[in-house]
Image 1 (cartoon, helix red, strand yellow):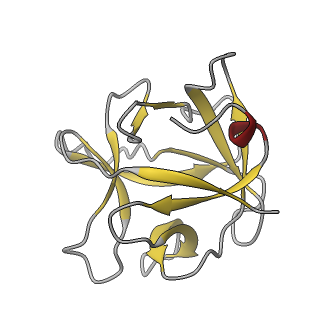
Image 2 (tube, rainbow, N blue to C red):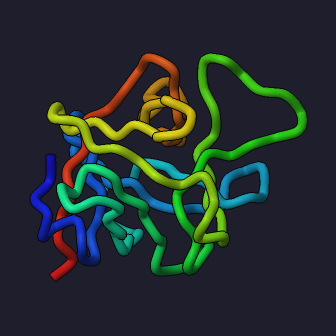
Length: 142
């Protein structure tokens, strides 16, 4: 679990397995989403929701989607029980809280889904998955 200090500052999220960084990008679908990039490109302001620093929200500080929070993308087209797209929502009350686990994985609190890099996807899209999970580190921006 990242230190409490690192969860109350501006950070980059680094994938421990591939050493890539979670970055916000415009996807081929035309909407903003998250992918893994070789270098840090997306800065996040982490907002702790508890004193232990285990519950946190990540606010994107940059383009596209400035001021938006990492959140579960809910679609009226239907829901996959296995995975869901990660999106950016401009509502601070959006479904955007995550829990850090001791193994450095991040779990979306309300859905129970895990933050996961889909390496089978050429874009290395970051998604929320029912069983697959990726471990993450926070890297201080300064």
